[in-house]
Length: 410
Image (cartoon, rainbow, N blue to C red; front, side, top):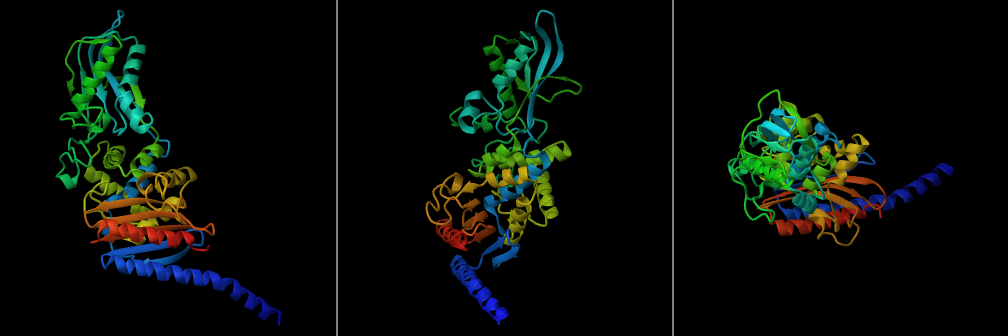
């Protein structure tokens, strides 16, 4: 008798939860049918360790900017959440007792996407490494005059200015890539045009910063590779990697993504290229149990593909990594109705501030993947990849799906 009563009680308690999940699956199925046959989705309860929903989840789709989820994961792992990218000034020559540096200075880039002027980095990034800091350090080293010139060195990357989507030339969606990028390749502080020669441009800006501190440089700045065996006279570091991936993911910044892809290759191979970076990022995903075909770091190429199931495998793996890396990864994503590319979506309802995600948009492609803290306290990982759709209509379907997902258990 007692066992029968307990059984009836258990059934009564389970019934609402089962009904809620049945309603969720029914709703998500309806929305995915509306998205067409070239779309897929997968939802997984990380807290309970079980699949919640799958719709054509194993078929690879064009990722668009969901590619940045893979780039961020690899960059965090290679550099660590506190890892930085350095920019250095090295000296060829010697410092005389009278403060004269007899020789040349080499400004060598280390792939820092935030490097630039103090006004630009402060306005757009809240701070970063600047030529003014380097000029101050050179001044502190006792250098008062330089008999040679300032060379800009971008040799830690290849000289290709873009990714495969632009034929490896400069793209209006990215700007010129360089290991010595200055103000993300803009020729003016207002961003009116792109630089034609990034390393020479950066060398000119350091030359001017030195002149502003009263340090005269005789020769005209130029581009050039740093000779071996030189001493570092000054160095500045980028913000930590946790900050860099947030500057990439939250607004979906293609320039940061392509720079970080080359940085991953530079860290492993000693030289940054887009192709090597994409291969290394895909290899890291495989080690986590995920998989992706990648052509770049940003998602601009339509050759970037993965399935919703594999994207969620990546999200699950990053959620359970060491706490500092996991927090940095999740914190880099846009917040529904609050920040980043989701600021104007889901401004109210269960998903508001409960869901975070990485958006993705190309012509006829819309993607959204990330995490939701549902109303019963569990965390769901989700990936919705929609191809051959109107991005505007697809976003409406995705928002409705996230509202249903976030309300699960409520």
